[in-house]
Length: 74
Image (cartoon, rainbow, N blue to C red; front, side, top):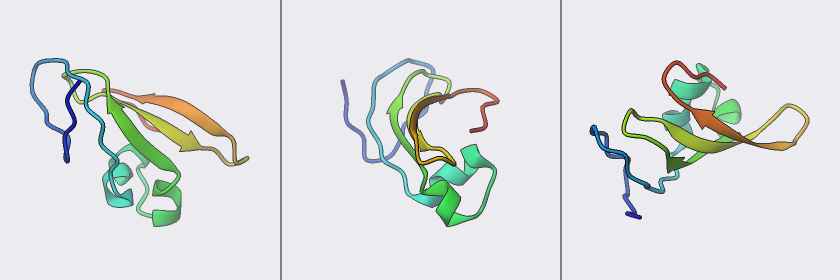
């Protein structure tokens, strides 16, 4: 396992932990509202294609584990 301050993208699969700010999560939520983006915490890179695992706080304040991959939107 490797810890990275920022996500690194290449063709190999690695495990990296990264907690982005809410501006980074806007790509996945398709929303510019910081209140929405703060509900998503991307924490584990799951593949060399830029896929990530994250925690999502849904509309009912339930925490969900989500996978963010190619074409994914929360």
